[in-house]
Length: 213
Image (cartoon, rainbow, N blue to C red; front, side, top):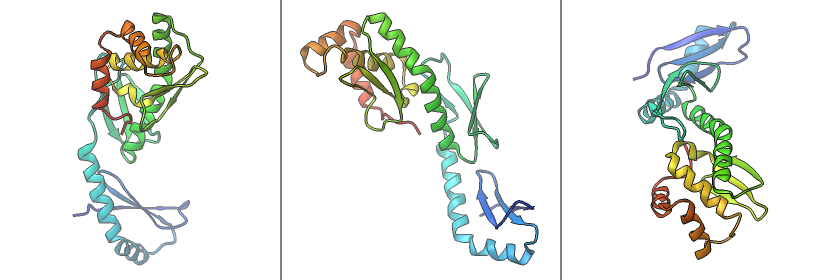
């Protein structure tokens, strides 16, 4: 059953527009639009409205109540609310636009990754004494990371939702490629030198997907 539709007339509205939110349905109408025209528009949109409303309700059951970040000691609570910005990260809470929750969560994870993953890679590089040229963050769907022949390292933004030890393994893995551009015995010996539990970490990463939301 659909909720009551909130109708708002606006001088800036040029046409009738329906928007479906997790907790309501809103309709914007030009000031000169008659009630009869509004009701006819709603009636003609019934099939789409039901599908969009059901989709929103299903999404709500799938949305996380918190997010764990690799460099945070505690989970970050997520608050879904109506707001102008896609996300606001403040006082260890993540405020998300409830109208676009998945887009907001994806945008946050990417922004957080761009800020924190390059710093983490740099610290690991300093720790193990393997240098690289540049670090880029991408929303990669098939790889956790990569290293080019000119020692440019790419890290997946999804790493921010992994445990710190797994992020460390990926950084070590890619940094070792600055020495060996292959997966031969010498490469794995070097990885093991800096991460004795790399085989376990490698297996655990295979059980996760290199993308977020």
